[in-house]
Image (cartoon, rainbow, N blue to C red; front, top):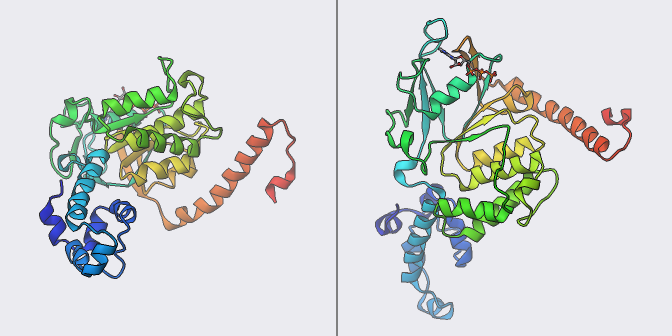
Length: 340
Ligand SMILES: Nc1ncnc2c1ncn2[C@@H]1O[C@H](COP(=O)(O)OP(=O)(O)OP(=O)(O)O)[C@@H](O)[C@H]1O
């Protein structure tokens, strides 16, 4: 929570760095802070002449109080009450399936980082995700421990349902109830006590349509969404509405959505993203990849500059394939011009 003291004493540039969304408040209230970055908000408000205050009906007290309320409401909405902020997740080594110590001491993953998890079938990728979800403390088959913000996490993460540490996005989204997209999102928004429900629902449907190939709207029934559309909806819902600071994704390669945009959306909401994937397009977007072998973390590879460079070529290849797919879908013929 922010209080009046912080607003009165912080420089405008520090307020913007800490609470970037206040730019919206400034714009809405026609507050032009350019040139005043080094001043406090109060100093800015004090620079107006009596005449200007009268002409523009500037209500200083209202603008100070308004900013305080705005910041606190946004923090509440974004789920960043102080105690819920997760800046880092640390995995402390345990043992592989043969009982040998894992090949590392600890791995720290920071907010807004993407980490991919690779390894053969049955090697223990899901086990690692489960350790994180359960915030293991040497009490799972791997003997690993998980730290949050470099400390043994509060038990609330394990047991509270509305305040989960981890949101899981899995390959199969089976909707049981036949609701419209709007009813479905309203249910979620209500259970998460969102105040500006309409606005949030609007943002989610827009983000989801940005990810999905074919558009859908709020009156579409969720049971009639295609696989790609429902996944896009779940990703947008998780990114925007979920308070869980950590998102685990299980194989989104065949999802029929714009996967890169989906990752971008999740990361822009300051979440830690761990995803099991073997798709080079995604695995190389990650900052690191954890390689699992025989139940243990075998090594951690930092994505190299060369690999990052290859993403450009990979994106072109991916585009060619996507275009071919679209043509096929539309019943057209494919020719070699795709490779030119
Ligand atoms: N370090 C470990 N010690 C003991 N058992 C382990 C360890 N790691 C994984 N296991 C067990 O091995 C089995 C397979 O692991 P898991 O399901 O996590 O594999 P996976 O890599 O997710 O496989 P898939 O790619 O098929 O989904 C599980 O029963 C899991 O509990």
